[in-house]
Length: 268
Picture (tube, one colour):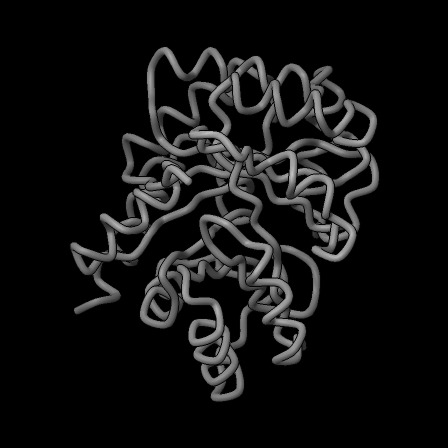
């Protein structure tokens, strides 16, 4: 099967001994037009892959910052269809890999088959569905991996710090693109704690995965991004960027560049 843009991007970074910077923003916060502008800004500031959150009324895995962003996005009328249309428009300006992070309900309402078809046609490269475990994702995975020469959608699943070795093997076998390692057992935006157990568990995941591992949840400062960059293949930053765009939009570009520089320096 043809390599996807996410896989190619991560391979190139590995060849250059670099780590991926994967920022997350909530699509539609405060509106779709601003989201498009911010995607372009993130790329300009050195993002390698971008995650777009799909707003949902009951975001169980998300902390207050993302929940509030989802509320603002829903208030502005943002829907999954509108986000897919926005990605289609973005493809006239950028080829950066884009991942949609959504709960399963919007996909179910949309229809799995139609969602996968529309997402691929629009230029979406991957999907993360936190509340869809691999053992219940058989039909979605099958739809996302066409048997023909198409690249399909990368299906990215989450490994938790509490995941057993057997569970890790099950999750990574369903992952395509990279494995998403959740650095904390709480919600997004919780405080990050990197201890010896964390380091050992990440090493285990990397050994079992045989594919890139990116770490998210709780990474909120350049210093934390640098530390995580030393342990993983990619660093995902969400709540801190969403908060900066909302509260201090004038300082967002500098903050994003600082994160990029910190991740670059993680190999030094």
